[in-house]
Image 1 (cartoon, one colour):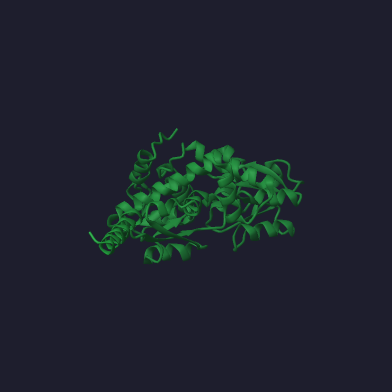
Image 2 (cartoon, rainbow, N blue to C red; image 1 turned 90 degrees about the horizontal axis):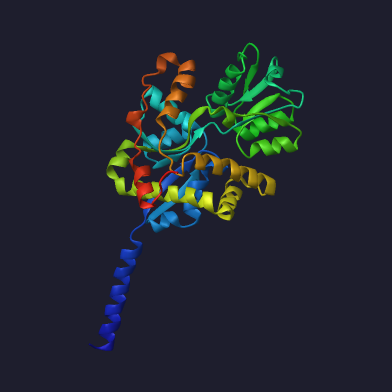
Length: 332
């Protein structure tokens, strides 16, 4: 064989081999619902090259507001909705969306109720103003808490509804416009530094909530089963990295939240590590959590619009189960 022919053969083999190894990456647009540490698992999967290892070209796009990201999912402008648990459970309850929840990363409401120093116990909330986002997780958690401590919203306690997300409500607390507010980590630390204190940690009450879901359309699942399997496997691997590699977790928290305070990082890490540990690192979609949202929250405000209370037809746990097999995880 001539030298020229040998070079051609080697070059051809290299091209073919590179295609086999790297393949043609499948593009996925994943919308995450807020700049919060709760989205670390998939964020880590992207930044550590785990998605790429599975031949996935994942673009993570911040998309806030249920009307925005639910429409994007329905129209196919995004392939995966990451987060938006309240909106997803509402869509299941009211119908109109042919969606599937393929994973949920937390099982209980992770919020803290922060309050003025003058409010030392639940009874002190009587006659006070509590901030909330309408039809959001913080409203759901606040209502459950008030009922648990024997206070009636709208009678004993005034709920002040505010748009613009948690940062706006944190700012309202600092300005004295409200007396208490439910926030997710790490916002409670910012309020502590401003002189407020934690009145209740909702994790202690184990309020059922299928948090941080991964949601896709049924059509996308049916046409792209291998892609969905690879996506969830990578996300689960990202969760394992979060649990076992604190430095990688810290980097993801900093990139998502833009916060670098060492105390904040440690507290945020411990909060989510505890939640991931509670599910054994396997985010199987939680039927009871979604149904609790439907009957304990959505039905309260829209009893006539509830068409479905059974979450099971809208869940597909097979992808997380397969991820556990591929990664040799037992869920313990």
